[in-house]
Image (tube, rainbow, N blue to C red; front, side, top):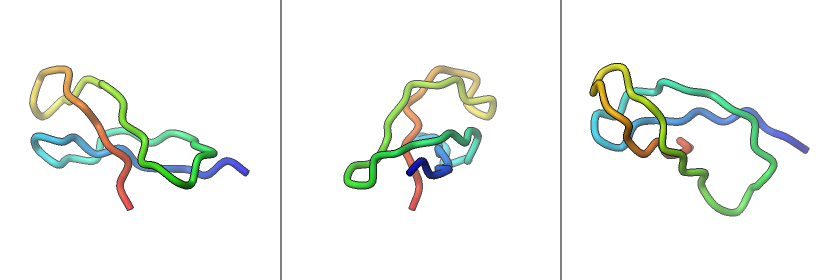
Length: 47
């Protein structure tokens, strides 16, 4: 079952992206562009 998850920037904490994930055990980490930082940073799945 896929679940909608929200991704937050590691450096500034802004929640920029949402995506679908079917993994329950570990948090998703993607390198995305943050508009507030104006750079490509790691975005982690929030709780």
